[in-house]
Every structure is written in structure tokens, then in C-alpha cells.
Image 1 (cartoon, rainbow, N blue to C red):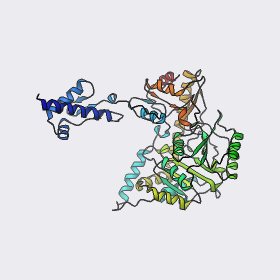
Image 2: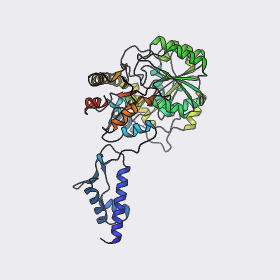
Image 3: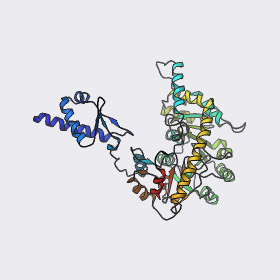
Image 4: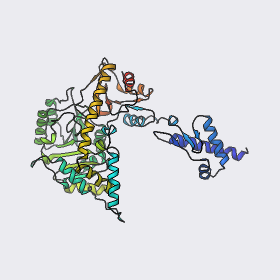
Length: 454
């Protein structure tokens, strides 16, 4: 091998190492063929073959006859540690071979993605493509109409399609709503623990957050809230519609009614998080919107919790703010697939989603009971569990003073990822708690993972 070819194979080797290390995949990575790589890097086939041989000797790649070279999932490198705990948790949760006990996605147990895509293909044949995509800035009218109908409950509690706005995801609809109502830089009252996505969006809007902790039975200290409302210039309150997320408990109807009266007296905006509104395990569940001032009510939710990641859209329902909301939609110029929105509308209008959600609730309740039994069997002396009234997760607190960040770090070595309670507070609460998912890969040894946690 002459000097030039020696330098060439070293360069190809470095190129392949960087390609492998930068890849993020849940399975095997198909690598370029010898000829593809030679053409891409302007070297000889013998040079690429030698570079692959070195990687094969090192165990970084393997070959399959007539198929080429592959990189096994176990060769993927872990992410660089992030200073932000949330970024760190979700980086590791996406790594191949990790058991993620930190998810909060009900649709992982049962999704509607295949029916959605089948309807979308059917509609694509019915609607010929236009030279200019006819994007509707506020969302497709079919989807807005079915959502308005879905939230209408009586002649007093009803919605119209023009009061519904579709966005790309939860973050975008929250950002749009806060801007439309001129709430940036204001003060927000939130239940605690609170969804990390909501806390992050409030922080991005420079909103000062006042957290009101939930006790073990899912109730607030109402006297504490009353004093906060009298003392602080609260402009909005962000609360879960039914099941308190991620706490998993259910607020009493009388408490919701009292809180809504106080918010109405002070013209405080109520942002009702309905992302898990369909996932309560009990038939009768009151919602804040049953008691709220309709002129100070905003309901927001996402569709992916029910259907899956192919439907990430978020939406907002709000009255009397048409001009401000429309301006925010126009400024953001969401370019959302019209056909997919129409397909979603068909799923809603056909009641397919209602049937699916009923089955999914049953699956969630079964998996919740299964995870609770494992915790009682293996960790009863270490962990107290809040009985879940719905949702996809359990809220768990250590019996003894324990920093769950350190537990999280220890479990990473066992390739297990949990969500420490610190993720769900801006004020340092819940350090001895964690959110534990039961929408996990049950083909794995979850009992052993619970033993490791204990």
C-alpha cells in the first residue's frame, strides 16, 4: 500500500466512525456500500474495503452476504451529558437498548395511526393536488367543526368552529395563546407537580410561576390559594381538566367550583389542560370548564395522546378573542397538512376515536394495576404510590429522604430511565418523587426494573 492510499483509508475510516457515532437509530444502521462510499469520497473500492475491514475487526460493523455492511444498535454511543435535567432524561430515553420508564404517551399501548393514514390516502385520491397548497391559517374547517361539536355540552356550554384554532403542537398553541392575550411577563398560578412542557413554555414567555402543591389525595390547600390570589397579581391559572397531570389524582368538584369562583372574581384567565381529559378511569368527572367564567376560559389539548405521533397537532378553544387569535395564527403561518386534518376530522365524526379511547382506557387501567402490583411486591418499603384516577403514569414518592436525581443517575448504568420529580417543578419541589410510566414495553422484564428502582 503506497503512502497516498494509506492516508486515504485512514480518512475513510474516520469518516465512517463519525457517521456511526452521529447516527441515532432504534435498530441497525445500514451503511453505504463499498462502491457508494468510493464514489462519495472519490477513493478506490479497495480503500473503502480496507476501512470497513478495520471497523469489522473492531466490532463496530458487521457484513451480510449480498446485503452490505451494518452497524449494530449496541454500537450507538450515548448522548453527551446535558446540563438541563429534562434534556438529559429525554436524550437517554431515546437511546437504543434503554428501558424508558419515563414516558407519558397513552397511544404507546394502542394507536390509531394506521387508520389515520389509510383515510389520508383515500382523501389524497379524492382531492387533486393544487398548484398552490391551500393552507387554512386557523386550521381546516372540518377539524375545527368536529372539535367544536365535541366540546359542546349544552345550550349554555357550547362552542362554534370559529372559536377553535389548530396549531402544530402543544408548544405552538400555548405560545400563540399567551401572545394573543398579552400574558407575557405576567404571573401564573399552576398546580404542582406540573407538566414540564407547560413549565418550559411559561418560562419562555417570561411568566412568573406560583406553584400550588397537590396533597396525596389530589386536593389543594384552598386557603393557601385564596391568600395567593389576594396577595399576588395573578393573570392566569393553568390546571388539568380532569386527572391532575402528572399527579394522577382527581380534584373534587366542589374544590373546582370554589376555585373557579375566585378566578372569575379577579378576571383571571383559566387555561384548562385537556390533554388527558379522555383518560379518566371513572365515569363521572367534573371539569373546570363546567364552572368557569366562559369569557375567561381557554381550553387547550393535543391529539397525539389519543392517536399517536402521526397526529402531533395541538388546538385551542377560546371565546371572544377572534381578532387577536387570528392575528397570531397569521403571524406564525402554520403550514399543517390539510389532508391529514381532514382525515382526523373523519376519525372524530365517525366516532372511531370514541371507540378507540374506550378500549385504550381499559388497557391503561389494566397496566396501571399491573405496575401498582409490582411496586407493592418489590418496593412497598421504599415507595408510596398515589392511586391513579387516570392517565398513563403513576406519581411515586420515596418513604425515606432520597434525591431522585441520584437514583436516576444510578439507574442509567442499568440502562433504565426514570423521570425525577424535579422535572415537574420550577421551585425545587418533589425532589424525592418520580413519575413512573405504565405505557412501557411490557415484553421486557418490568419486574426486574422495579426491583432495580427499589
